[in-house]
Image (tube, rainbow, N blue to C red):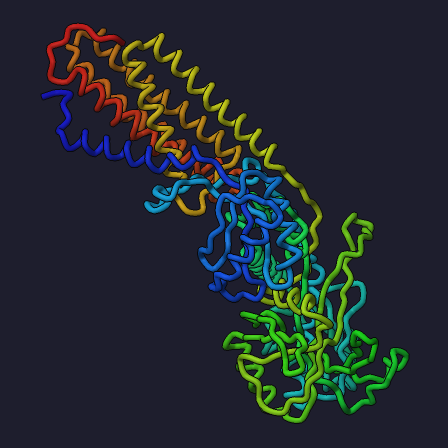
Length: 620
């Protein structure tokens, strides 16, 4: 029989609509201003006395909270509005700042019964939720300078390994990719060139004169180093944002040397800027005890090529070997505690590779002195000729220790002046070391009022699009117009529910534009179906036959049109970034749901009303 669906299809459609409505429901409850309190030394909070102390402090200062609870090893306090939230933070930060991170955030006000079934609201982007936007630029000259230094160290090692010792390696000035090696005679130069050429494929060797070689780092090697620096910094920034307790951060590449960091929901940028914008790490060097450590800076010319002068906080010069034993990139955790003299110390844990390096080195250098060098890049506030801020490198020897026994994956460093400094350094080390210094070149703060304004404007655009479609469809197609509008509303509910369920999907203003676009596509599909039915009726077919042929033949046109749009959206997602990807995601989801609702949902309603009946006229 034409135009009749079996019972199981109706049950399936009702089930899909019910689940869609259920998982779209959390978006109606909004968000609560919140404080997230997490341990600064990466330890879990299990002691409920901290919870009680926070509750008592808020009560003592007449600050009313909606709830305070311990979950996922962090304490979350919810408040009625942002004024109370900020007041609570000011109160708590004076008491707990030395041991805990107190981050401003927004938490969904979803009822517990919905959260139990995994129903959460859509993740809103920066333009809708409010927050802070950072555009951070990587110092690519520093990346290339580090690569050149690695090549120099490797060249020196391989020449010594081949028993060639009478040479001098210099960096060619005003370049960042060229190195010069000066030998004692031509034969040594030719022998070295032949030997080194078999080791290196990432550099080009050429003769300068009878005694010198010029080494140029290839463009391909430079590009690989650039790519690594960008990807490594993106990963580290994401890890650092997680340390701040910020939900749904967006960290993505922008251009060739920049990274965009969007922190939706954050309202206080001081801690974020401090953590994100700081390039701090530790370097472990062996102290050159063969030279008198009382040498001052004027005696720098008397140092050997493998040594350099660094200073302690008290401006005491320490002569270190240039070769770096280990850097902070191998640190996987760092916790602050006290030594036997009640002074702050940081307990360092290394990954397996770093642990092996440290074990082997200390095992072969028992009795020698190892220095811990703190390295940080700071913004001077002065711009160069290209308009970029100039970064300065600050280095400080914070610890000297005699190697009395082999060190392994864990050890402690001291030398911090107080616990505040130790906590700060521990957080930076735990959050990861950037492969190259970065600076914030653009910062935009979007308040929650502006975000709400964008949401209202976006919802208005959706509402007017739906109202316009309703008016047109009802006037032009009458009862079939009502059927199409019912499918349109179901389509919107399904889009919202799917976006709420999918992890990593964030709704932005371009995403709202994608939703409006797919709603128009859904209306267009129903127009094609209705016009085809009218055409079949004009050709003299019965009502039942016209309904059947209308849906059957219109399906191919609808599928072709949607597939074309789908391919375009997928390409946009692959090659696009940020807001373009947001538009592409909502478009892809909308196309899938519009196909389902425009064809199957409307067909089910039509079959329910007209299927299996003798009808001579329909309202279309």
